[in-house]
Length: 626
Image 1 (cartoon, rainbow, N blue to C red):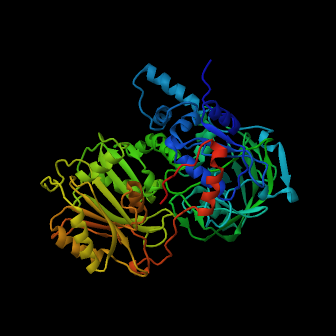
Image 2 (image 1 turned 30 degrees about the vertical axis):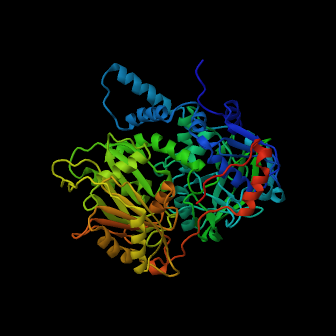
Image 3 (image 1 turned 30 degrees about the horizontal axis):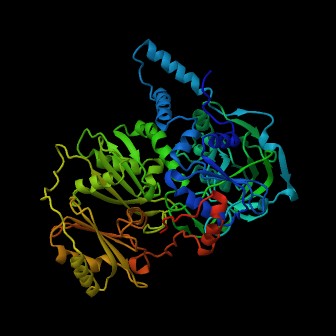
């Protein structure tokens, strides 16, 4: 008998998690406002991502909450039917070979290609006449979103947000269907805001209805089998079906049923479905929201989703997540994306051998690629290609290394890059479009980008400048001297750390406290560094605090820096690269309000401390916070 590779619904996935010791049921009463978020925050920071949590007694709702279901490599394997990402990627590569029209090598190749072609017919969604997701129906006055256990994740959030919705829309022009994941702020008992980012298919379809001035039918699924949840997050090419991808991942078509108050089709085995419409002429202020960047996104106008019915299965479970600075549950979903979509990337960029999205880069701030070079300047050509390619166009930083470099070696990879690049020759600075959630750009949606070429040089490329291997000694006495010199230059440094003293490019990390309306600190620091160190190369990185925490330093570097505004590059007289990763203000040329970091309040932290032993049978443990 063949092994079952999919979960029919969320309930089956929960059973499988529990069977493998990957789920904890919490029977103590908890609040959906901040408390669940804080408990999850600690669990995801436990070794291996902790456990999935099923809260069975949530104040104000009879519906349990599932969270952290995807927050470990082990749970992601369970989600995909005990298959590794590499196994699934191989299957995807076989299907892509059909699209590429590769000539078969012989009879066995023809048979394999025919077999793969026939598989495709199993994947499109299959319509059914009745469904578990419509066992319970709320209409008109019965509709009340307050009866759902929607979470408030962070203290300064603008309200409660649905954070793991599968938003189903249809193009008015060609009928193609999108299933994306866009946060939804609760406005009242039967309406939410719909946070469609401008570069997503849902937003593109919305604009079609705006132009026609017609209501847009929308349905939202909350809680579904893992293949559907992952597919809604996947960076598919425009107008490619997420339901088809889910069918491929589960090796079986997704059964779908027609909604009761609009004509959209939704997964029949869903837990909860919100049916309704978006009025193209109506927007509301949405936010703030503590986002995956680790910062609150600002209040901005977004469309309103009006709910005409809520349907659900008996004993439904509400599926949620919390986003913020890594590690978070979405990090493990991103790791799956790296591997599963590598074959798709290789169709248009065959020189790419592997890719990695650093957790501290928030997925869209940085991407690293190992590259098999065949001609001079191929790495820099690839940067330009990727910046013009689909969702990779929003990445601020792209890093290229040789094909033999392990992208998943952590600090060793970072050290390799620092020990390889020539900071005069190997940096490509340009400008372009940024993600809508990027807060550090010159202006919204636009700013500087940086490409780092750490590949080996080949004939036709300029060789890197040879430098003598040295160990840069920096004692506590020298630290005090430098601090005093910087103080004379009116730069208030509270902490200094030297990283990688033996590397080609050591990094001097400065914790700088800026006065109100003090900006452009690099212009004050630069002459001091040139005079004190004289010889480079040396990278000087300024942050607000936490110089001793590699993860926080990298997070601030990748999230708070616009390469056009916040860097002083090496010149003919020096080999110093200065980077300002501090918070910005008007004096820095930053015209917006700099966002606040997502931080939990002390009242909630103490409340969870008091309940921890009853929930988990052990005393609360300390977790690292920014």
